[in-house]
Image (cartoon, rainbow, N blue to C red; front, side):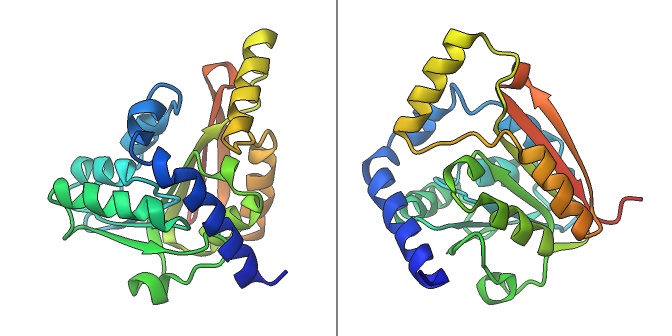
Amino acid sequence: MSAAARSGEAAGLMDRMYRHQRHIYDASRKFYLLGRDGMIAALDPPLGGSVLEIGCGTGRNLIKLAQTYPNAVCYGLDVSEEMLVTARRNVERAGLSHRITLAQADATAFDPQVLFGLGGFDRIVISYALSMIPPWQGVVAQALRTLAPDGSLHIVDFGDQAGLPGPFKAVLNRWLTLFHVTPRPDLGETLDALARAEGVRARTTRLYRGYAVHAVAERGVA
């Protein structure tokens, strides 16, 4: 299957999944997508810097980013046009259309120059998207390639769950499977390997007894 066909298949799956869910997505996900706001609070983009969210969904994180960092310019991409319909509406309602630009794209093979007229980004965030993308390693690799010279990649997603009680872990994973979500227990190791190949320093922190993981890769850090 060609890259274009895989991208179209992924877009179709996400559109079918979120055609109705997108209307209640933010209200329901706030209870279990833990660590998102902490990641945003730690971004510290440079004055006038660019921030990209890969898998931006309804635009919830982008709106919070733009409100938290009023001197930053924000960009978002998602493979699902259904989600982007909601994101555009939410961004407009927040009065942030002049500071947030959205585009539909495959996260494994997007061209920042074509989409946004930029060569790279000062900050890139990926929030609970890698666990829904089968070729997730390609997403991380592409994100690292599109970092600005002093840029950093910030990821929060489901973790290895090592410290969670067995019954809770079993119920959690059965529930996640219903939404095509697969935790990536080797996220830290994979990020380390990909970061080394790009000359980037990476670190990973387990949150909430392994329920979630927060990973950061920084270019230009000795």
